[in-house]
Image (cartoon, rainbow, N blue to C red; front, side):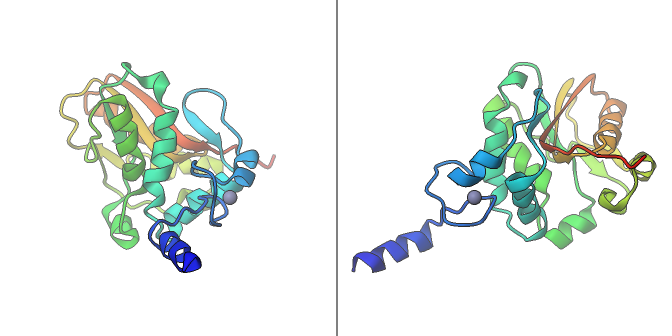
Length: 207
Ligand SMILES: [Zn+2]
């Protein structure tokens, strides 16, 4: 009976680690073993270094349809967003093109932006920006081509006249996407744009 009850509770309340996807005793998003492997990023603009359990969690969140990880990873970001308290008027996620969103079923940056905005007590403007071009994935492009690929991909949309924006995305690699999105925000009248990502990826360029 006890086993049955335990099985049932696991079924209705699955507590799995976002990194290894195994049942986790930890109250955090990562189990204890994964937590030991996670690297904090330096500075306020990223929470983690990309890699290990963080990379696995983001992969699962973006490409395996695990949208529920958005709330968990977003709350981790929210827990590290104190630096921006009182310094921004709204949170704007870097949007996917509508075709990609329709394919995936959700927009990952929007799911991350909501808990961050809630913790800062400002609105999440999920339609602040619009992706006007469906660009090929940045992942496969060399450094120099990323900026060219993404330039002009965004347009300001419903910014509601906000002056200072916290721009949220899942991963920063070269920063090309964040720069293009910042340009669009400034074109829409935003005076200050601060980028904030879940994970910063260090690119080792072949020379
Ligand atoms: Zn784990």
